[in-house]
Length: 126
Ligand code: AMP
Ligand code: ZN
Image 1 (tube, rainbow, N blue to C red):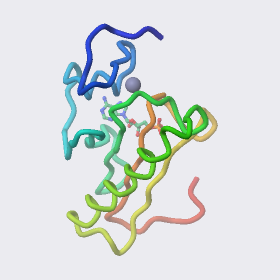
Image 2 (spheres, rainbow, N blue to C red):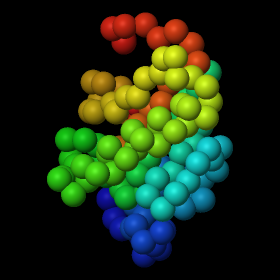
Image 3 (cartoon, rainbow, N blue to C red):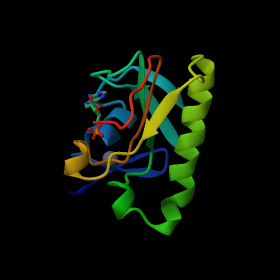
Image 4 (tube, helix red, strand yellow):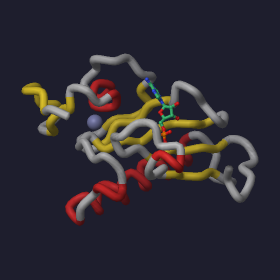
């Protein structure tokens, strides 16, 4: 991967990363929320009535590639998810998921927290 020269909100944009390009506005997405550190948008293939992705603006591949410097933003994404769950009235039961690695189903290698809710969620997940 190569770093593009463009900077987005002080975070470097990985030119060949789908989610970096969504943050930069180069690829359209249904934005739900944005602040200085995170960007939230509707999943293109929703698996529940609420299925949004909370992503750090910093390009982090996944949890196993993250460093201690990334710990705060990974937790902060959970707080953003809780705020959106409250706004959407799905606090009776929702799930936040970080998929890690191909066997988990991870298909985009920019850290993203799934927020799923609005229906009964079975356990264990598939
Ligand atoms: P994962 O499988 O955990 O890597 O999750 C990637 C998620 O990104 C999937 O749920 C996809 O449906 C979603 N996705 C892929 N491309 C887009 C896109 N262009 N806009 C919104 N969501 C996307
Ligand atoms: Zn990225």
